[in-house]
Length: 256
Image 1 (cartoon, rainbow, N blue to C red):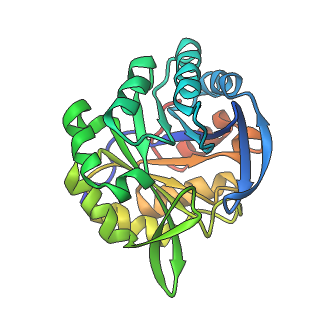
Image 2: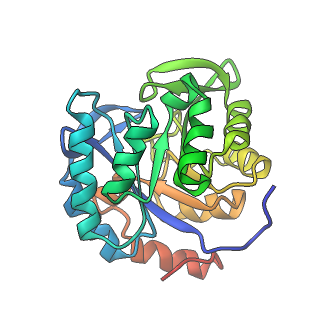
């Protein structure tokens, strides 16, 4: 369990990348174009985002080459940390992306299928480089993790899996509540509070941001370390400087 307060809370725009473009959907489907990822990254960096997350949601043979090129292009444009995820199945994949300029890598399905990968990545690069992305959905009143971009339920309960991931060397948990994703109805504060109280590593809240108040609520009610959103930032519905000003007014520590 983590101490209350502490470091500044982080605001993280997330860019889902498909065929070299940023896209956004609702509950993981109905994707629409949201712009050029490198341009958006530069814009967010200038607006005062603390970090960025890029998730490659296309499974193509060319994937690794494409992602390495994207990472290089982003690294040239911005000076804030960024995480890259999607299609990382082995040490070599992570190595290529970190060498190209990514600060952290995020894994989801590959970790569930081969949990030892978490240990291997933590040993090879250090735990601070390893983010475990968890897509979770309520099924028969149980939070169950989902794989393959949220399409496939796994036979693992979310809390139990997150604890194992931490024990194996995960440095951070990126928790997306699929029932809330894209709905703009607010974050899943109950689940986030449970997870945040259970682990000793940073937790990033994802899924459901629609208003500035939702960010205030998630930090106040759960004390997570960071909050991530996509469409509200991509379509200019929330501007990061405005968001941070309101968080500060609500006595939530942020970097202005």
